[in-house]
Length: 208
Image (cartoon, rainbow, N blue to C red; front, side, top):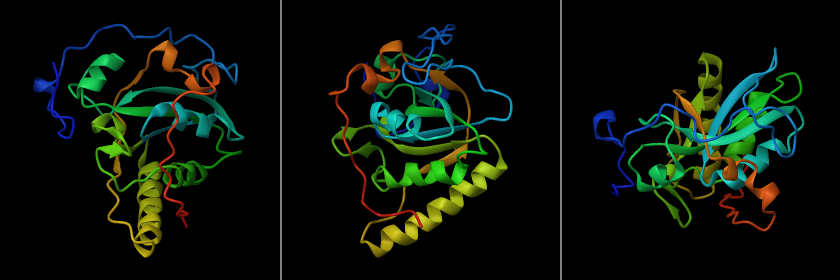
């Protein structure tokens, strides 16, 4: 079954989910060696969707101060969706990167800068040739401070993008709901597959 990939579904119209995760969330990060589902005391969590999550995850695991990253699905209406379900447009999810970080070493503003400068946040339900709601630009915030910071960064980026001739930013900025870990083969995909598909859709515009 396939759905309109440009239209977010309400919960009653979404596909059926499942009670168990699609991956063993006790596994370790392939690069950092840290548990995927652990948040050390004092660390914070951020969620970003900026197109294909394979390349997006690598951007964040390379940053000093990042404890662990994982890819999965957020912003939708289905519990523990599979990748195949997400691809139909029938779950409402975006491909999302979970970032656990030490705010004493890397700030949320630093993460926002990486987010905005490494994709085109004006494209709506797509990034380049990757078309559909799963590739939409989104920031899922965990508290009011993140929400305010994300909106402020968006506004700064909009000023820079407008000056460069781009249209309005379509990034969804909303409090996070449930995040569901993606399948094991998606986790740290570009470490396991160094020559894997990794499109770059950065505008070249700096987030001031």
